[in-house]
Length: 362
Ligand code: TRP
Image (cartoon, rainbow, N blue to C red; front, top):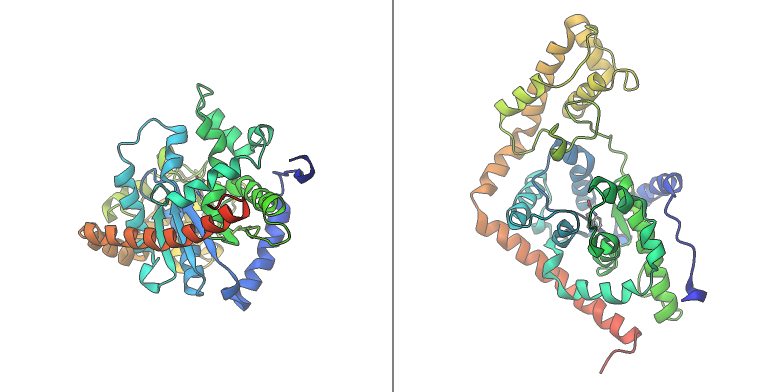
């Protein structure tokens, strides 16, 4: 292992942003050079922050013609919470949100699957675990934060090793592009190191695995209706995609604003109002400054009313499709079965190559 050891650097945010801009250009020029994998934990259904933050970007990549694998990371749910009762329901809700947002398995190049159903993917975890040290897993900043958030009691080994599992999620299909948020960059650095070390150790000069790049999207950070933190279901500050129009109006009515009656777009000094304006802008295609100017002295009440109308209108087709999909559990199941079948075939091929490289063929 020693001669393989290349330093694992977790903190490369600025470099990632710069590289993402270059990758964006390449994507437009030659989408066929890319294979995307990304995913989510099935912890519940998705909200407006997900829609503007990641779902729309996935749909955009799909529509460029890029093959896109979407892993529903059900095993990861077990790392930091005790409850598993709702996993299958969450997987179904997540799939409904994906489809309602425009991900389309019928495109022939969009595959949605829970990783627990791809045994060959999971087998990659074993050799991958031998390519990293305990010390490296220990200093993963995202895992450290999650351990703090979990309250430091009896942390299971899955918590330290799930980033290695995530490397298997990404490398089983030889994805070279992974659209993620900032918190996932450490896991991508680890994945790149695992790909590199596997190639060096087992694959000679041939590179069996590509070193995948994270793609940080330019999509804006959506705050919750409390205006202070990222929108998130667990912080109780989210508008769910599946919420009704009345629920949406009521949530926005209670959103935090500030006492200044004149509406201006000032994200630094007026984050709550700026976030409402940003959402309005995303729904209408007009700039937040323009909307602010138009509302002027009419105050936060007027802004909220406008946001409720714009957002409900914007989400109307998605929500209608969502309601239709809710009535078709068999169709949802068939989408997952198709995603599983396609992903398994790819995983079987990769595992065969991996076994050969490791001299484990019989
Ligand atoms: N860790 C990711 C999250 O918590 C989910 C995930 C699992 C993932 N496997 C992945 C994301 C592979 C991107 C690629 O959101």
